[in-house]
Image (cartoon, rainbow, N blue to C red; front, side, top):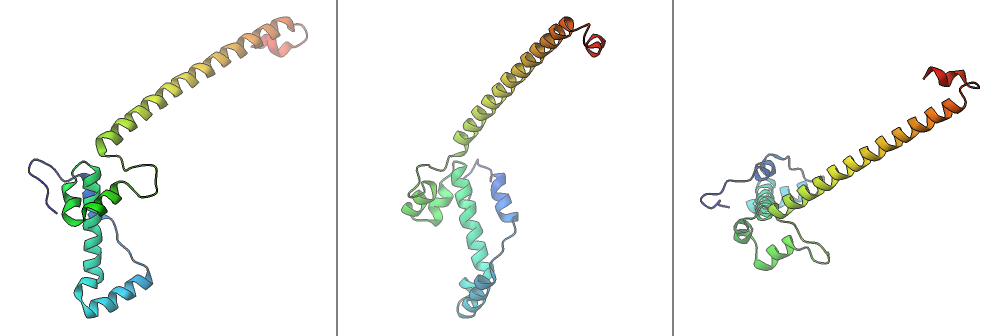
Length: 146
């Protein structure tokens, strides 16, 4: 999998290569038996192939679909980016970043509105408490202290 000139390998691809890769006991045994017949079925080769496939998918999500096209058929690449039977698609990085920014703006606006609501409630309660204390000043000595 080659990176075109002028493009950097995304950090997420480095994370793919750094992540631990484990297989179930059954799969590990099958790979040991397969490696005895052909080294391409061994755990090391299978792990390397799996990492290349995930790294190519990550790069496609990041906007460079060439790596995925190098290792998968056109139908397979389309299926990986547009899962069958799902009403959603994998968002490319710039689109995902825009959506995240919009979500963050909505969250900040909601937090500001909620803080305003809390402040208004506190002011209302303070006014209500003061009015109640004023009315009941003679009956409730605790109110006069506040």
